[in-house]
Image 1 (cartoon, one colour):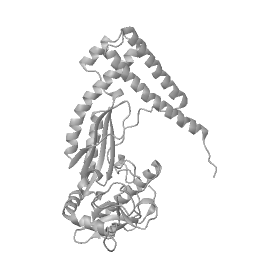
Image 2 (cartoon, rainbow, N blue to C red):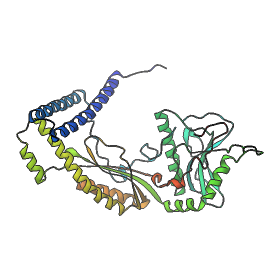
Image 3 (cartoon, rainbow, N blue to C red):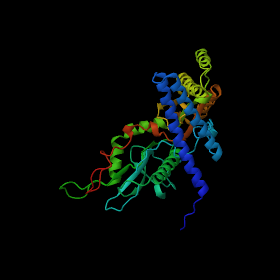
Image 4 (cartoon, rainbow, N blue to C red):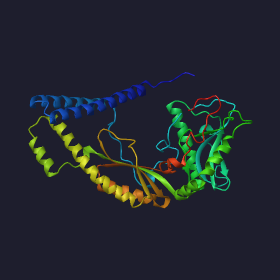
Length: 384
């Protein structure tokens, strides 16, 4: 099959990548220049020359982007808040863990586990998982708990980034569908496999099958699992990320106004560098204040809040908050109201509001399978 390439699109994509890398380097040069100037490593004339050279680089970058129609790569529009601004299920922002791809035929079988859910007959009907595999519920008698699984081979899914990304989306979509039907869920991470038990050393007959091993594991923890599923019933996870755009953060405090008047005789390049420094300092102070205020407001409408590493941040942003929230379904709009209020009160803020999805961040480690407890290896294989 012949490959058709749009040369203009290809050139524009490559140029955009080059400009992105150049902007990252430019930001690092600006920071290093400020360190040397503030540290007294450069004399006044040297500092002015360095600052002017960086200004020329900045102007050249802006001209290149204007000539080739490249948008400002350091900025993105602020996400909308409220119900209309959230992403829906099956999107890659959902906090499912990544892992690896393809399967191979073996003499043993395994169960790929997606989640633990309340035992609701029919909740998995018509639901498919990775590569379209049909899913089913393994109900554990006497516990009220069921495992959402597909039948396969005891080999982890491995592949390239795009393929793994697709599998993670498929797993997220499947878990979300059954979670919506059953009312609660303890999602598993990617590539949780329960294999048949290897035959005993010198004993007669085979070991336990994959389904029996899974059932035994759930039974041994039935009380803890049931309690956690009840605690998470009627609740969802939301992801909130807030940053400040330094270029529009107010910098007109009395101390900063004094510093500005003292530098009015500096060169344009030095004024640019010092302006960036003032914006960064002002944004940092504002971020500390905003973090405490927003965290307090969110905890007034959410049942739990867990800090998470930022997933997106550009060079012109200052981090304020990145968190997973455990929220009752009926309180989701209240979170949107808090974020809308934050955006209105602080125009420099950028808000990302994602969800709702199953409570991945609140399915504690003790409620997830451990490979050394249950997902044993087939005969003849080294531990994974």
